[in-house]
Length: 189
Image 1 (cartoon, rainbow, N blue to C red):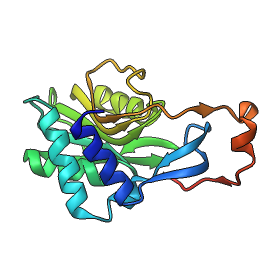
Image 2 (image 1 turned 180 degrees about the horizontal axis):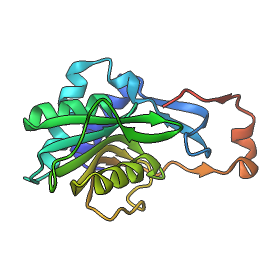
Image 3 (image 1 turned 180 degrees about the vertical axis):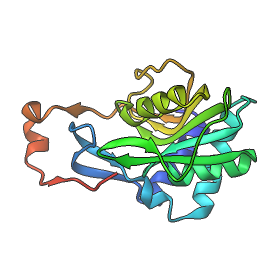
């Protein structure tokens, strides 16, 4: 782990955003680790620093809008947009699917960066990709704080993350006994 990744991990640990126990992830998989980014988002100094690191990793990518999926990507997406001096919009759930509401639209050919907090299977990112494509925007990249797939999740656009980790995840019918003994928590995302 390089110094930057260690700094990011230290921020998550200090703010109690990295939890251990027995968790059911949004994907339905079970894990002994959970990133609760809402905890880190209480600390604006940490959010500012994480966004600084993420913007630096973008390496000069040109985008005019940041799109973040609600709820997880809202705070970090807004801060990335603020530091990049671009427009910020968000997608929110409607009938369990992400959609643009509140009059948000893309100009034809508008370059869009998708920003998310934690990606495990990439479901919300894939929904945002569809929103941008169907709305006439141009997909530039997806930027995330944590890639729980350790880089195995692939999108049709470049993916940039601050931290790549691969904590084991398990389907409900394949939970190891050591994890099954711990009461299940579903902290919400």
